[in-house]
Length: 166
Image (cartoon, rainbow, N blue to C red; front, side, top):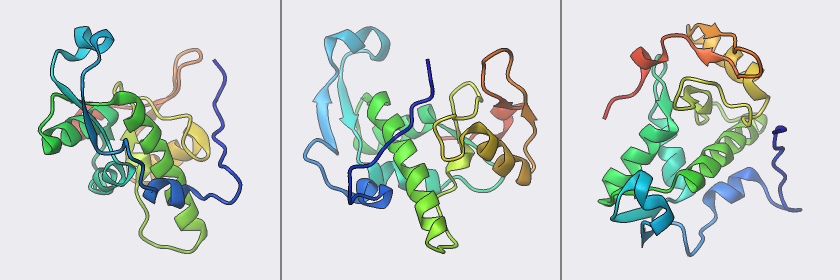
């Protein structure tokens, strides 16, 4: 599968997408039957992009977060069984692109999106600049990056010991 390049509608910015209200964002729905085998029965949160960004901003230097960690925190805050993996993943990428827009605009404090890795420690090839840029930022913070095997993306060595806790 090729790398997906996200495009914005004309006149939109990533920051606008991050802050845009949508009637489904923040909504709590029953877990669809097709997802119940994996998530169980109960309710699922369709998160708000800003809340995903807020959690990503809490990851301090020397720590790492995963999409699962973000989803678990969102579900816990909302008092639901689970948080939607697909929309959370989309909002993680929107937050990353908005952070790079902020950097380009001269802002000093941006969302440290590079500290959010995949659940298995792999780097995110959809982030601005791809895995090379994420690896460089993580190395600057003292993390060791292991090369991926075959077509697998690189991963953070011993990432488990740096993960955010509940």
